[in-house]
Image (cartoon, rainbow, N blue to C red):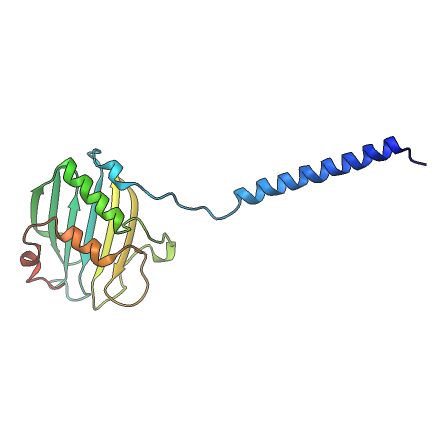
Length: 190
């Protein structure tokens, strides 16, 4: 016959073992769930001289001599507007405009409100080339210390994309950084 004292000990040990198993299971399941990406606070990089945001508009797929790309690169000291011809990044025109830390901060905050850093990192969609061949592809990137922090793309066609932000607002914000933007692209195939 098992004495009452031994029975209490066995029941207590059993409950302790069950409690340890439950706690271990909770810890394991808590750390194995989906990882939620912490939103990037882009405006916190306004003072960083190496931080830059860029928009590249890649025009319709056509003859080399007709293919155009437009790029706007914004840092805390300058906005650079580039026009490329062909598919090999042949620069045909560049213009620079002054930028300040304060204006860069406001620009970055505005991009945050446009959900600029919202998108998919699906490896099968890492490149926009070939998608939307009769339309435009919009590639957005954010680099710090020569390292690409984010890169997403969208098109003006139906179909796949990785950029989940407000496309029309994002385009408008970048275009507004370049005086006479519409005049400078009016003759391009975009």
